[in-house]
Length: 422
Ligand SMILES: Nc1nc2c(c(=O)[nH]1)N[C@H]1C(S)=C(S)[C@@H](COP(=O)(O)O)O[C@H]1N2
Ligand SMILES: [Mo]
Image (cartoon, rainbow, N blue to C red):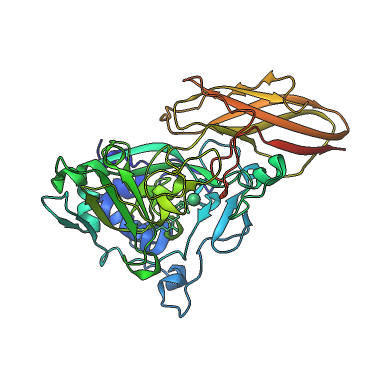
């Protein structure tokens, strides 16, 4: 694929066509992304039309502030869990792709403001024969890939351990919105690893963010070399046709489709390829399944989480209030192991199930996109609970019951959704 694949599509703000316009005026993709990150669409338009850019449109966050905010986006549309954790309200969503302003945020420290011109990505380690240091332009010059993929926190649905099983798990009490579905563009991590000449001895690839301003303190995650060499594991520089927003890892983040969000390191600064299995906080004490059902592996306290699990949720407020009469109910379902084949819904806590319609997407979507489903419900006045259950094309179905784990990862039993009909 080429730069042409970064075509902007219309989003809910009608910003579609800006890249189109920029391209028609002869702007390079690199220049486009630079302008977008510096001054947003206003900067691109100003450059296209030759008009001076009013200084008021330059983001204030670019100026140095004594104390960095936890995030930069407007928190109004989100459930704010504090500490830089913004949960998407699925009820705000009707379409397949989550607009960037609704895209959930999970920060372990604070969002960074990185100057792409100063930024470097280093690739090193004992299983690297040709250590590299890449600039932003170097990454933009690599062959690019664009596809739709969901990104989901390992702790999405965590509050359901308490609500459904009566066992509270530690961590941010996410409902069902620590997930979003985006259109990503980036280079394949594989291409960079090949350029760095990784050796046959390579076992672990450690991705390190620049959190807290330094690679020493950065949020990090290990993945096996096989996942790192998967052509779909990206070094992503664009979300929904624009440069990555600051809160999502500008200038560059990893995107590990199908894996827990914690592997998709934001503000990526350093990649270490090792001939040994590496253990760090995020596969030993965090992001690992700790509980009776999970015997410890290696240096981990449990079973490190890697792939996500199949889940579904309704796009309704919790609790929801609906008017009596025929209602069209919709929601989203996702699986890391194939497209969603079937979604069912139940009004009697899972005793009987009816079929929902899995909506055919209006464009070709990758196997990493979530699916939209809907069904018609004759809502009668009173208190109701609707449960949904998804099955993927490989035959995986949401289980009736899963074992508890202390940190509440990967909850995927059918979620009961309370609805009052007046
Ligand atoms: N550098 C860095 N990368 C990170 C994180 C972080 O705190 N720092 N959080 C991780 C977690 S736990 C998740 S779920 C995803 C969330 O990505 P988003 O904020 O873009 O939605 O980013 C991951 N990458
Ligand atoms: Mo996460």
